[in-house]
Image 1 (cartoon, rainbow, N blue to C red):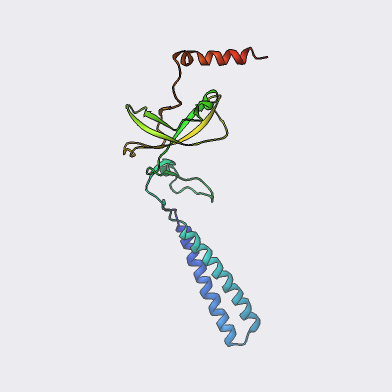
Image 2 (image 1 turned 90 degrees about the vertical axis):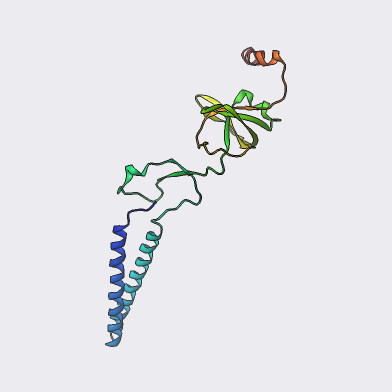
Length: 201
């Protein structure tokens, strides 16, 4: 990505011309023994040199190159052609498709079951018939609110090769291994937990 630099090029030309002019004035004053005028011209030349260095630094920052090959996941610069930008403005977000991972949202009332879990499977909405093995890497220690519910974010890594059709932001369903449970526990544990909270004194 390249920023529009015509104004900076004009400033560079003006600063370079000022530097040459003040340098010649300082040499001329030195030849005529005008010490005071020489020092003034030298100070002006120094100021122009610093200004020129700053402009060239900004020109060097006008070309942006991603440090890795990836996919643009946010930002449409076609709408911002020739528009001014400020330092710190977010222009693009690039995702590294070679280092993809899974973020699982686990409800607050199920997070205690994940303590001993380390593997699982994920199926993407675009290809639900395909299942891919994953392994838990990290459990975020603080809950987040999503859709008016508290969830914990669990980060998982793929245990198989990355597929070329995967894209950042894809959604799906992940099933994490938490051990075996009885059929009665599976169908009744949520109701029992609700009654325990409701009738707790």
